[in-house]
Image (tube, rainbow, N blue to C red; front, top):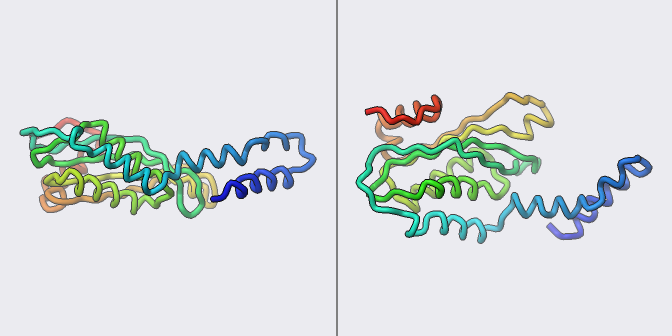
Length: 196
């Protein structure tokens, strides 16, 4: 978006509410919206660099641990690409290592980074699972997302309690019913205690 578009938006709001005592509250709104877009909408290059940093070799460690590891809920904000209103995701990532484990904070970094552009929840879930699978190459990956969408909660149908759940499974989490059941038991029940 051009700089002028934000300035035009500020002028539009001031014009729409001309004569209202609160009109001055729109002073600087164009700049604030510009900064909001910069915060929520990274460039493709910035996203790629952040993902490269999250999965860099120095963040991966050789380990004999070969059971499931689940992290979450990771709190993630993004924008709905249809209305450009905020969406809040509670994200769970799980994987079964294949000799390599990743520093725990890196899953949160990856989850936040993939959301740094307007994106629908279905695509977000798929892209996050793909990034973990391609970059870490574990035996299996699971991503489970619970989303609250501003386009449904604050406008239109105005259903504040409506949540959307999506999931993507890969490798052993897809192929082995017991691994799939364990992953869903952990993320849906909030129980992070591994049971044999």
